[in-house]
Image 1 (cartoon, helix red, strand yellow):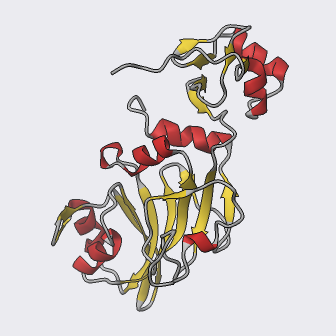
Image 2: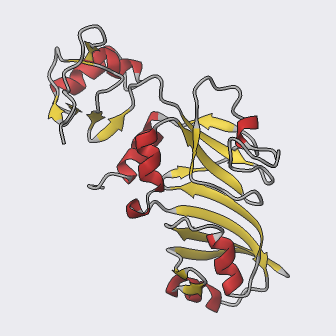
Image 3: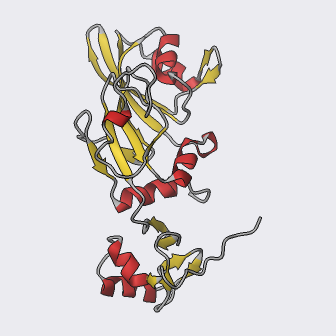
Length: 252
């Protein structure tokens, strides 16, 4: 397959240190020092002082971490409220993501899904390359959930989930599991999975006899929900975006 030429067009090329500074890496002087110390690569090659790049197409890494220089790309973390459909065009007229995204000029897409009864972290972006990798099973991106379940919870539940349970569409296994709190007839547990089959957490807990009454996704890979209010947004930091790219790197 032919590769696109990496030489930037004259009318879109800018000094590398200017592009790095605009991306928030540091001052122009600091960025020049990074280039001089051979800590910057452009499209897989070590950069040199005086290089020019097209910020919309160049793949720039500093110390091996991706720097997003295309100002048209948007990366957002949202705390999806319970009852909101992870859809941009719901045929049933229910409250959906599109009702929250009117403030953004770009056409944005959700990374993966959360069912209407679940809540928590949802990543939203217009970066198709990153979205495809984050959602492709071969990359094994972990998702962390806080679940409120019917209790009391025997100690054997965690061992069963870590060993794997049989579901109607095949076995499923938790990557990690811990009891967070026990409140009489209910309990809070944290469960980490790297797969995204429909209702997977609910079905796994049902399989071990402890149905979920509330489900919150608290992390996707290296990105955490934090203290975002329900329905709230925040833009990912450069470090968080770089961490996502590292998570889907074959060399990570």
